[in-house]
Length: 318
Ligand code: HEM
Image (cartoon, rainbow, N blue to C red):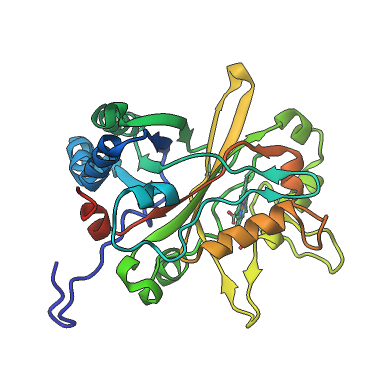
């Protein structure tokens, strides 16, 4: 669409701002070696809009969306003239007790819908198109758990920025004009020890998260107290400006296998903000006072991607 007033075509981000959904698929793949595999991957991701329309139109009330993220190494294989300014691999964060591991991934597909079958169908068609050009390294089917709670029992997503502050926190702007409308994304798959978590009292759990469990109200923290998850993730720069990110975590699990997890996904305009949150959580503030969520939740993956605007994504076609 052309904007008559500015004379410019507005940038169209991918569906970064899609609302929290009932169902989601997080699919991470690596691209096989060789030019043919890279070309096939470029072709499929550049044309993903067609697939989303094909499946989404079968029930528009399902609000199907799919965001494609591209890793640093994959970007370099896509033979582009320029690259997003802050795109880099996920650096392992080694704390005194817990480590945020870095794991492989060239492409991320973050599929969301109100219907699990639409997510499934899009994933099925997408993988058929990608064929042997990719290898699946991680696949998680997430679901909404009651009133958007994680499996630790807390409402997750409350403090997400909305409206203009969402765009300010999650979308690249004029500071990197060629990639404006894009977003840096970090994903981590966490597995919970729910048995150990259940041995804590509700008050102990609330102190770890920084909010009340039943009614989801923020707790005040006293000076000198060990910082909660909420406080560790409040990032303020030297000028006192707060920097936020957009999260769309989803629970997943297989009770029969003893698997209970949270898939963390954070979108940011500035990648350093998420990296700083991870340092706060794993190394601690002050150093050593790490996020006690980690005593009950183990990060088993960690990967960084860039979700370009739709215009940039379409232009990736070989
Ligand atoms: C086991 C994994 C995780 C769980 C279960 C979890 C859960 C929660 C919950 C329940 C809240 C409070 C409600 C809300 O505002 O959403 C919260 C807040 C938040 N989390 Fe997490 N989280 C996890 C991992 C992470 C990671 C890895 C990051 C960043 C790298 C992060 C960043 C944040 C931020 C920025 C807030 C909002 C803080 C505020 O402004 O109040 N979380 N999380």
